[in-house]
Amino acid sequence: MFRDQGHPDITLPDWETFRKEFSPYLVEQVLDRGAAGLPSWFLPLARGAAIASPYLLHRAGYRPGSHRARAWFKPNREEVCKDLGRHCLTVLRGKELVADLLGRG
Image 1 (tube, rainbow, N blue to C red):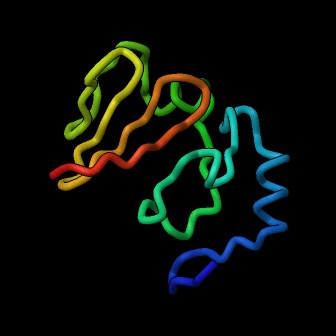
Image 2 (image 1 turned 90 degrees about the vertical axis):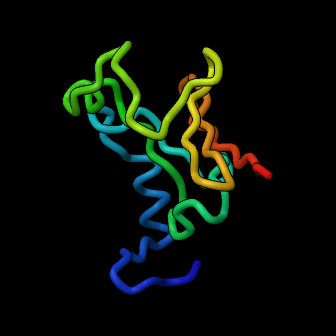
Image 3 (image 1 turned 30 degrees about the vertical axis):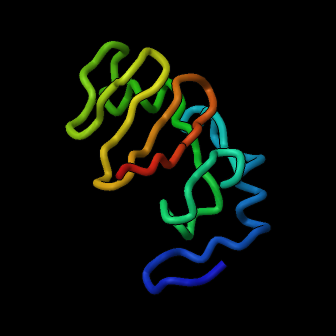
């Protein structure tokens, strides 16, 4: 893993500890980079992803059925997408985060 000035250097042992000992009030699930399906260009220094807990989402103002933020669209019931120019970040519905890089023209 490379370093970037101003970005925290999370050692592998620290990541493993966080992955196994996270707060259930804040995080529902922690996934390694491969399991989360993060494209290499998306947050390239991240070792993985943390899925927010229902409690944290509620505290942040999310309510089921609330409107999506700008630039996000919902092509079907199971996914939401964010337009990133030539690419699109797709997040599938469910307990696991799955990011899929779809090329466009």
